[in-house]
Length: 431
Image 1 (cartoon, rainbow, N blue to C red):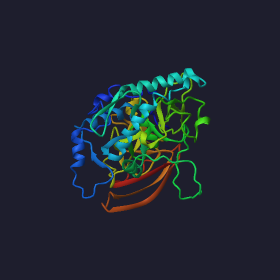
Image 2: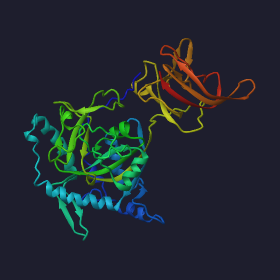
Image 3: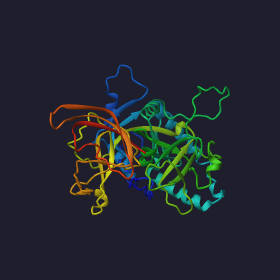
């Protein structure tokens, strides 16, 4: 049974009011005074290459992150915590390169109008201009304190999903751009793990959902990314761009993309839009690490929007959530979906393996009524570990890694009803 979430077209690429949430709209990447002060007031005997401090809910940065996150909200995740990161060298490099891009933009003019399917590329660029106009013009501060007005280079806040270890590396030394050639052909040489469908560069997106649900391992980086007018990528360009560097004189590729299966929110294949298609989100590829300034680190946790109390199943450790579905056709679609955040170890988010009655609903299987505390599994297998009390003797019985398997045409109550569980932790897989 597939998940009920559907990926919807992203009609507005970036929230129109996002810049208003910034502590310094004229210099968008500038941190608020309070946050910056907390960073540098930390008692550290040996300062690291970057500073990191948790963002509080009364910081303007929190409002910025929250609005950007909810604009295209992940299905799997909520924000657990957000941190401001400041790397002095990275910021100096970013701002210095912005001046270069601003000068280049007046000489290296876009020429996509001469490319095939120019009308479709125009639609693509119009969408990009809608995004960047929210943050342009802006200023950069020179080393002598003077401010330079930047009109031709453009910046955007963009998401990048990854692991905790990689995010730590990005915060410390910025994004890494890997080349494609090794003279010695050494197996220990670092290489990019990304094929680069739209060019061999550093990938970002305007969608927290896309970055979190598809590419993150529980962590996101929000970066300010600079560019001239990018090359607008459309359907049919992948053969030309895949695995290669920047197209012609461009320093960025802009790709409105669509999922090949919008009914599956975990589908990882997204392709450039065809003529007339509405994009689900945008991907942006840049080709110089100096074009990106990592600014916020967002730690994620699995979303459980409607937790149900299960007195018979008490976990010993926090786990993921499992989705269950009420089978009563009389209740609403909203009420059909329930989440149980109780001690789940592993499961496939695309599948619904269990069913129960939703609150206020009753459900009968055979001659047996199902209560809202009984979970029935179908078409899955796994194992469980726990302890339960015997009704007669009150003796504690331990169960360790006991396997179970339920066919598609069967239902199994997981022994919740005959046993008085003290706790149970589940590990569930599809067939």
